[in-house]
Image 1 (tube, one colour):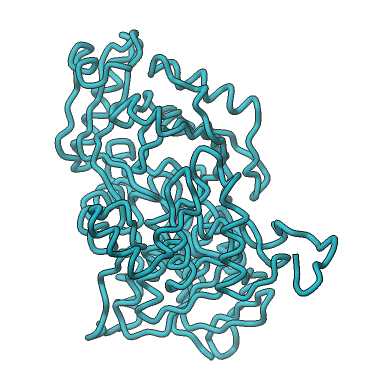
Image 2 (cartoon, helix red, strand yellow; image 1 turned 135 degrees about the horizontal axis):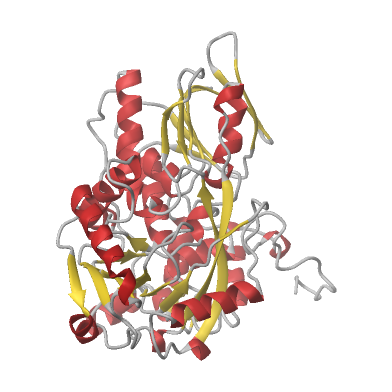
Length: 486
């Protein structure tokens, strides 16, 4: 088969592009090296919808940040994604650095950010009592928000798939060549794929994909920038109500403290440039550094309520600018590279921009039957007692609680498995339902979730993984019970 467009990468950028392209009459395929969407850069980030004051005025990053922010309300409503505009605060704790807040304010105004305001110490503490006692002033951005990064990526991919986009998982790109037929031939671990156009949305690997097709003088280098995080229990979720940032540095926006859209408290990230493109291990030094920096701007952080720590990678390019457009000397090959923060915020606008480029290049025509809305997994907790009881009477699986920490039912897990691009691993279920994201971090619910995956997909227990690849939970059987497996 010859595809019209192949997208490399099923993270938030690739999923956004796939959804926007699904509006048009085109044969589109997404290649993803992992076993699910949202497995790379997109799976571990702050879940922040940035206002747009940070990126340099006139940059593509600034433009797409502000556009993505503006799109987010309608976008999340159409795709049934939890989103809240809680506002953000950039905190200055040194009087001699107050001019830096004014610089950010001026830049935000140039970028088109609405509602920005510089608050005095007293105004800031009235809005957020747990700010540091050393606070001198705050830049307040009411348009900033919080979102579930998993739900955003999964929702876009599901909607694209419903509209005809094919997804091929566990498919790693090994080489790309332009053939004599003027088509792109992509060699993968699962055979060759051929396409008229290619979009490189490969996250931290986008530099390597770019360098397969570019001229020698046009190579780019993406550095994995690791950030450690700590997630706190929901008991700590009200410690702050806004997203709290320090003043930014050359390494990024700094260690933030924020509530999550699900009611936890998140602290992070640190910033460390590394060589390992899969280096998502946390370190003691990183966590200690994170805690020290967070306490500079928010007091009395209840770090004893940490339920897990994790690390993510950002696709950092030295110019700190998104790279989007046709690669020089590689006709019909489109880069969507170096998408680091605010990539999550920008993703709807990135999808719009890249699909627009391809629409013009290919002369695409809009579908008459495009489906623009999508419903998330039913959450019985959102129902009234009466409606929930009726639901359980009709389908008792919704009354069988599998994850006690997050009150996730068997019915929700079954839904997550049988949806478009359904879950096939423990992490796949977790990101779609939150089963395993609570206080015990899947200590109790994993065996039950494995039973459901085994039953619904016909997978052997030895085939069930945490997150694909070799992350098997059961390695081998030690004995068989007479009359059946144990």
